[in-house]
Length: 408
Image 1: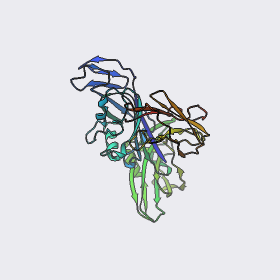
Image 2 (image 1 turned 45 degrees about the vertical axis):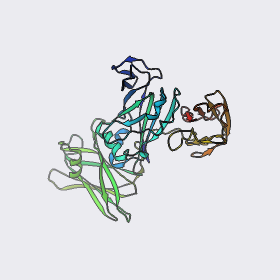
Image 3 (image 1 turned 60 degrees about the vertical axis):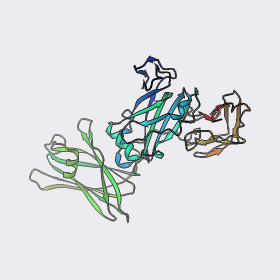
Image 4 (image 1 turned 135 degrees about the horizontal axis):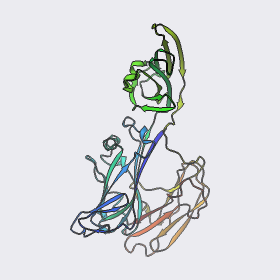
C-alpha cells in the first residue's frame, strides 16, 4: 500500500505586470526582478518566481511520516519560456542543501507553453530524507523558486511513500473509573505482540483516544519499533498512558499497530473492584486487515488513463531520421481500446497515428511521425495528444496533451 499527497500552485498565462523593483502576484506565484534587464515585472525575463506547496489541505498528509521514507517525488511545471536564455533556467526547492535543477528545462521552446515532469529523487541532493525534513521543517509547506526567463503558470508536487501492509486496531481501556462511563473500578489493558517470522521486522504503533458522548479524542504520532525473530513484546497500560501523555485518570480508545508482515496480537483485559481484587479477565485475538486507512482516492476501478511517456530527462524529443517517436502508456486500472495519437507541429502540420488497445500498465512505441520539411528552420516545436479523437473514456482527461521541442 502507499500514500500519495499532492500540493498545487496555479497562476495565469498572462499575469499582471509591474515596474522593477516591485513584485507581482500571479495567483499563487510571486514574481520579482533579478537583473538590470528586469524593467517590467511579469513579462517572464530576468525574473524569479516563488511559491509554496502546502500539503496541509490534503487529508492524507496527517498519515505521512518521516520514518517511512519516500518512494516517489514528482514535480510538474507548466512553463512559457520568454527568452532563448531559457537554457540557463533552473528550479530549486528553496531550502538549505538542495541543488538547482535545470536539465528538463533547457530544451524548452521559446514562447511555447510546455508541461514537464521532474523526478526529484533522481536529482542530486533530493534524497527522501532531505525532502521529508524540509516538509517537516515547514510544517507541511515546501518553498520553491524558479529563475529566470520563463513564466510559471502551474506547479504540482506529488509525494508517495509506502505504508505497512497490515493494520491492527486493538481496543484499550485503562485507568480508574468512578462509574460514570464504566462500572467503578480499575481497568488494565495488555497488548501482546509476537513476531512469527524468522527475521527481524519493523512495526509502528499509535493511539487514538475515544471520548464519551460520541466525541473524538486526540491521535498520537506513530512510534516505531523493531521485533526480532520469534520475539514478543507487550504494550501495557503504563505504556499507553505515557504515549498519550494525558493526566486523565481513565482513558479508552484504540492502539493502531501496523507491520509489513502478519503478527500474532492478543489483548488481555482485566478489571478489579474497589477492594483491588480481579473481578474480570478477558483475552481477545486481534486479526489484521489490509492497511487502507489513508490512501488517496483512486480512479474508478476499470477506467484507463492514457498519457504520453516522457524521456528520462523529462522531455519528449525522441528524434530519429524517420521522425518523432512517441510512447503511449495506459496508467489506469482498466483496458483502453484502440485510439488515435496526434502529433501537431508548430508549422501547422499534423500526423495522426493509430494506437492499439492497451491493458492496464501497458505501453506502446508508435511508428515515427515524420517531421515537416521546414520544421527545423530553427527549433522544431510540437504537441502530442493521446486519444485525440476522444473515443476512450478515461479516469483523467486532463493529462492527454504535452508540448516539446527538438533543437535544430
